[in-house]
Length: 620
Image (cartoon, rainbow, N blue to C red; front, top):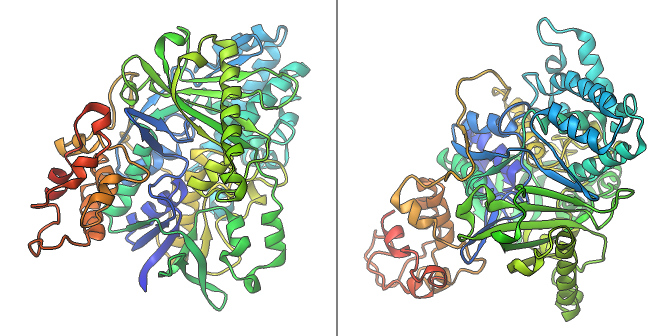
């Protein structure tokens, strides 16, 4: 039985954030993750010479207004390099293109050209949004979920007008549509904003809480949108490093089968392979439906809580195409994020978003090619992983047909795009559920709609003492800023129970977040060993590990070296090294090994030379 102060279940951004902050406060932390790598949807994968964003590609929160990512990385002192998009994105709306310029006045002018006669009303709408934004995002508790705030956090700041706080609170019960209709009378313009909120959080304006719309619309211009140099896996890797540098441990391939209880108090978790982990506090950073579906014994499940959790209306599922495209097939004005909307009247499967990842970071793809992720909603029925329907050839045929369909939606606007695509990788909701363990393949969890948002969410506190929640099911908002905030909130609740200082935003000096010009290499390994380790392809079923006589987790150690996590690499090597027959006692198995890993390294297929695995690992 393995014990720690805190056991965190799930190594997505919320779980990693919570674990790193608790380790920063001196608690012993262990993380259990079912998958083989950290980050959940905010990660990357590699095929051949290309690094792809796995899912979280529209990132906010690194600079400017509401910046929880910057706050966390500054608290941990973990540097991270990011690109701020020149404009957050471009929307191809019908036959018109609308660019979301960082300059809000320029954006309003462009939007008013698309919707003649609306400039004054748009100006009034955005003036109100900007007036409300500081009330929501400007306090010392702005990176704490409202459900986890103390009364003193809700008190107006010194010198502030108490009526402003009351105004912010009234937004909780209002819809984005009610806020917009105070100023906007053009029905077609309201439908345009419907499309925007559906892109952000899968809800229409009548469904979207006003408080969420204020943050989303203003942050387009104040904070802006970002991508991580080297791919989102670099952010997850920095958080992993923060946990392991502070003495924490992360167990990958550790799928939890049940939560352990002593009476009604949670005291740990058991993995599907029979191992037990105990802790005074347990943080569950996964889909809460999994608790209601078997991780918690039925006798301990409150009926109302179970009904509520299983009754949430979920966001729609997405289908993804990953690939590379010939740069010559892209129009000269192509931006890193392009949204294509055909049907202006309703949300349907014709709305797709194209992320052109290597426009800003050419290292992600070979010269002359641009890596991309294309995603759109899918309303079809997709099978469960491992089911008979999943194994049926008809499933693969359906994937190919859907891939052609959504590529065709881009090709209609950019003729020749589909023909210029190579090395396509298709991911259905079945794929999402299989690799990310998201129930039903729903990446974004429950809808952020009125009636099931903010204080209608469970928050960090669970019905069981000792068990806390983090993740997209628990707090307002979608995307990486929201799950990061939920991780901060869960960490604060654990700290509060122990009488330890909680995390609150405060003015600080220079940030460890570095904003890079497009094309500038970032998050580059600081050592020669890290540079060589970055050639690893992070294989799903690594032939190097299968060939290793000692069963070493080669990709796990190399991934940590690439992220500057030398201590974590040493630890992972020690954990996975089962010893090579005949090796000299006290020496790493790689020393003196014939290195069969080099013969099977897939990097040979990319540039003819294997990663120097034995040399790297024997040097740890």
